[in-house]
Picture 1: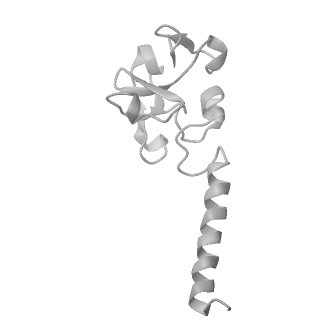
Picture 2 (picture 1 turned 180 degrees about the vertical axis):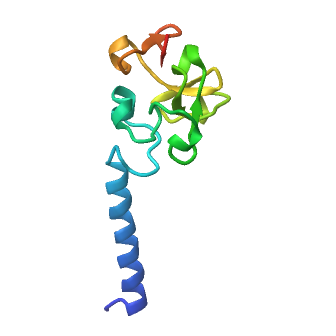
Length: 125
């Protein structure tokens, strides 16, 4: 039994959407990227994702804010506001009401950042 034309169109749309989402999530430059290895280690190449150097919220992808705390965010870093770790992506943790990348050593952080708070998050000193 052949599927109806309507069912084939719905299936085609579903497959197209799945392929587009897979390509987007596999890319460090997807328009709504929240966090990625590129953003973690090379924020200058991140293009608005979490970790990108910023001057204000307009420099950050949708949903992200520009943390301007001089001692933690170097005066401008795109990130998410949070109350606890559950508000952050899995590779980030909540500290000072914003999300920072998790770390175990300084090598897990972008240049200029150090692994702070008992080797748990990357912060600017």
